[in-house]
Amino acid sequence: MNNFFLILIISASILLQLGTAIYAFYLFRLTGKKPGWILISIAFVLMIFRRILALSVYFHDKSLCLSINNELVGLIISLLMFIGTLAIKSFFEIFLENQKKLKISREKLNELNKTKDKMISIISHDLKSPFNTLISFSLLLLDNIEQYSKEKIRDFLIRINQSAKKGLFLMENLLNWSRTQLGKIEIYPENIDLLEVISENIMFLELSIQQKNINIENKIKNPFNVITDRNIISLVIRNLLSNAIKFSYIGGKIVISVTSKNDVIELSIADNGTGIEKSRIADLFTTGKNISTPGTDNESGTGIGLPICHDFLNRIGADIKVVSEPGRGTIFTILLKSAKINGNPQTN
Image (cartoon, rainbow, N blue to C red; front, side):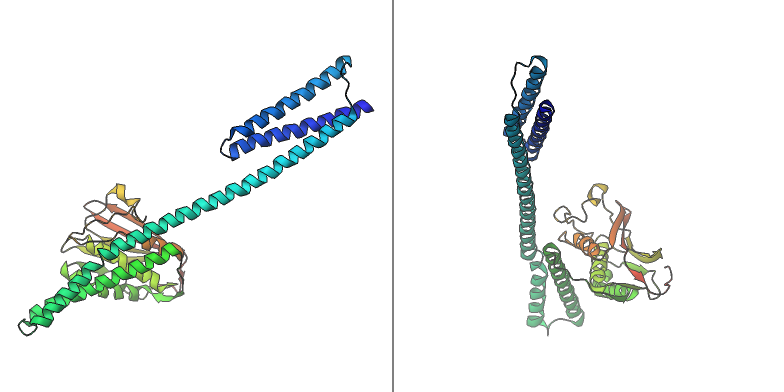
C-alpha cells in the first residue's frame, strides 16, 4: 500500500514539474525569448529525470530509501511552483496586453502628429492660394472698377467666385478629414434623392466645367431615392466630380450613372481623362500614400480627397472602387451596400 501511495505522489510531482517546465518554455516565447525561462525549463526537466531515476533504483534493488512524507513535501513544493508559474504567466499576459495597447496608442499619436503636420502644410500652402487670389482680384476691382469693362469685371468676378469655392471646398475637406482622424463623425440617415444631390454638385462646380468645356452626361433622369447620410454622399460626389474635372482634358466628357441590383446601389462617375497608373491605384485611398498630382490644366490638390471619401463611405456601410487605365480615363463607383431603396426606382 505504501508503495502505491509513494508511486502516486511521485507521479503527481513529475506531472506538476512537467507542466511547470512546459509553462516556463511558453513564457520563454511569450516574453520575447528571455533565456532565464529556458534555464528554468531545463532545471525542471532535470528534476523529472531525477525522480524517474530514483523510482527506477528503488524498484530494482531497494537500496534507495524513499519516504512518503518527504515525497509529499516535494509534491506540495511542485504544486506551489506550478501555481506560481501560472500566476507569472497571467501577469506577463496582462503586461504584454498593456504593452500592445501602449503601442497602439503611440501609433495613433504618431498618426495624429502626421495629420497635424499635413494640415499645417495644406493650410500654409494650398489654402493660402485661393485667399491670395480673392484679395488680389478684389483689390484690383476696388481700385479700378470705373476703368474696367463689364467683360473684365465679369472675368474678375468669375475668378473670385472660383477661388472662394475652392477655398470653401478645401476647408470642408480639411475639417472632415480632421473629424475622420479624431473619430468624431456623426451619421444622420435620411431619405434623399441622388439626382438632386448630383445636380447641386454639378452647379457648384459649373465654372470649372465651363472653363474646360467638359460635357457632363447625367444618365440619371428621374428621382432616385435612397436612405443614407446626405452630407457624406454629397461630399463624396463633389470630391469625385472635382477629381474627374481636374484630370479631364479640354472638351472631355464625364458620365454619371446609377444602377440598383439586389439592394445594392452603384453610382458611377466616369471620365475619359488622363487615367491612373496601376501602381498608384492601391494607395489612392490611403492618407499619406496618395500623392497629389497636377491636373490637365495644372490644377493643384492636397491628396486627402479620396481618402476622405473612402473613410466616410466606410462609416455609412458603403464602399468605393476604381477602374482606370492611363490615357483612357477613370471610373469611380460608390457602392451603397447598406442603403435602403424606397419604392422601385428605375435603372439608369
